[in-house]
Image 1 (tube, rainbow, N blue to C red):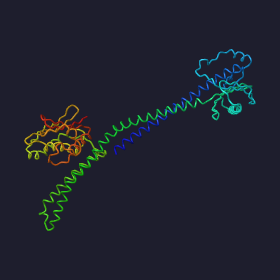
Image 2 (image 1 turned 45 degrees about the horizontal axis):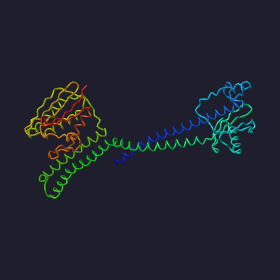
Image 3 (image 1 turned 180 degrees about the horizontal axis):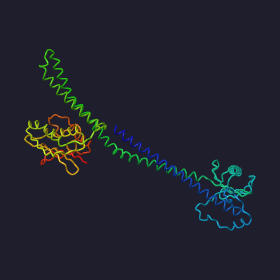
Image 4 (image 1 turned 60 degrees about the vertical axis):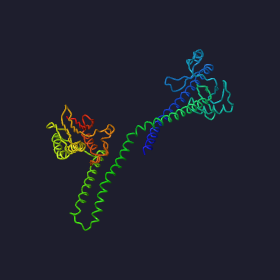
Amino acid sequence: MIKKLRWRIALINMGLIGIVLIGIFTTVCINNFSNSYNELEHGMDRVVERNGKEMGFEPATDDSGKREMPFDKNEKDSYKNKPDIHDNAPMEISSYVVVEIDNDGNIISTNESNVTIDEDDLKKCVEIAVARQEKSGQINEYSLMYVKRNDLENTLIVFASNTSLFENLRNSIFINTGLFLGSMIIILFISLGLSWLAVKPVKKAWEQQKQFVADASHELKTPLTVILANNNIMMSHKSSTVEQEQKWLESTEDEAQHMKQLIDQMLFLAKSDAGENQLQLSEVNFSEIVEGSALNFEPVAFEKEVLIDTEIAPDITIDGNQTQLNQLAHILIDNAVKYSDENSVIKIILSKKNDTVEFSVNNRGNVIAKEDIDHIFDRFYRAEKSRTTKGYGLGLSIAQNIVQNMNGKLTVQSNQTDGTTFTAVFKTK
């Protein structure tokens, strides 16, 4: 699934970038063709001007710029001596045919420069050019471009080959296609690299989910096996009384309670992941919650010959959820009691520092290895897998979730000198 996701991301990325590149390269090709067309037309205009001087007329417009006006004789004479305003123009046409026609469309004269056009083809091209309203255009069937100018008597038409235009267009398309394909290959490798970074957290979440399902199945399998075994035993003692089967009933009840606890914890985490744990925050006396939880665990600690020492500042309040804060204190203190050495001390501290409230639980026991600390809040993770203490490895994950839901931070430190300390930090108003 992850591999397919990587390729899907890469292909979508390539598709989007490819569309942009196609737009850019298409614009470049069109722009190059347009520039070549304009340059050729500009060169043909110069041919018209040069030949117009020799023939004594030049296209001109009236004040409105809407129609061509002829020159009078004095203007024609003065124009012959007029310098070419385009002498510095970059485009020069060396191969062309200039045709002068009268108002009836009859060819008066032709002037060929480095090119020869068949007489019949020339007549057809003239007819096409005259029939069109545009002063310039393409005659693709003859691979020619024309520019025409006229005074009131005669019309001057210049024909030149447009083959170079389309050759340039083909070359531009070929080059840009090569650049596009090369770019797409490079983008493919870049997209695959970026997709790997993009799916990395997804891959991690997917692996955690698979591990979560496997661990949950394993944890549920054990109590179910015990319950089924107890039922089989009781069913085999059909004549026994309830009192005689009491120990099997109690065992079944115990395992059922463990299953319920596990399912409740899993549902809590699932709802948190889905954003369905809508907390109702209010001002809560955190000091009372921590003190109450510490008192509740004193009998358990006493049985294990562990002393609970508290330093709880009075009347510390935070904006939180009382039920979940009770659960947080229960998880951290329960965890400390479970993993404390005999005849050791559990230190519980609740204090306020500036605009933060710190709740820490310290116990003396086996040090948590650094590689375990990195996963200590993962679901179903146990730092010491050889321990026989009951639990599902969900408590610390739930504790972290509770703290984060209240915009706090839960951390852990463990070393031989100071022992193991879990610290929850909450911001206050």
